[in-house]
Amino acid sequence: MTNDLNDLTAYVQSLTAALNETSADVALLTRLKDAETNAARLSIELGDAQDKLAAAMADKVLADRRAVFARFRDIIITVAHGSNSNGSALAAAYNITYEALTYDHTIHDSVFMDHSVEGFAALPGEVYEYLMSEKPHVLPPSSWPSLPAILRRLWTSTISA
Image (tube, rainbow, N blue to C red; front, side, top):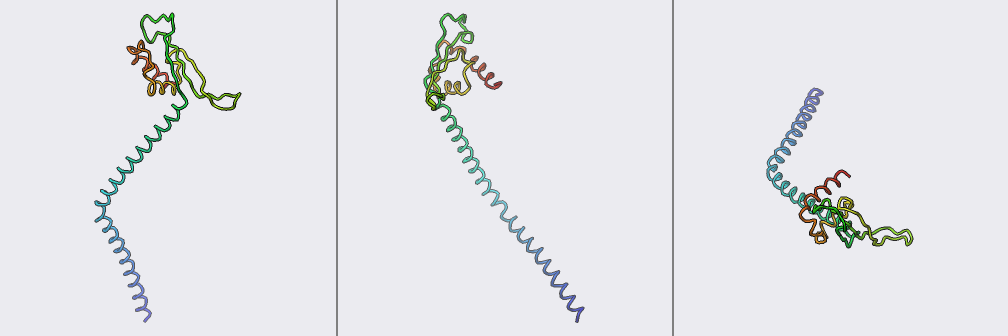
């Protein structure tokens, strides 16, 4: 009887192992049958999620940009009198005055204060972006013919900074 018991125990164990293996195969087969449908659904969900992420990132960039631009107002560009430019906008001396929020130590708060620079290349990058995005109409007409050169010069100076 011990042999029969050992044989039956071994047989039950081998059937259990075979059932577990077959069950795993059935689960795999089910997943494989559904794989094409799931791949199509996941592809659509991924595209939607990527679109939402791109929109959220664009919204953040715009919000960050608005926050930076809120620190500036009023920008005035004038050509310096007596400038020896020979008609070249790049060689002309431009005085650029802008208002920026600046911390005032006497009142312990940020207030708008005037800042001035000479020449487009001296503009801080954020002020340049503000000028080109929000106030391009203040660029003096004399700078328009050379505007691409000014932009290239500013672009290379902001990249190297």
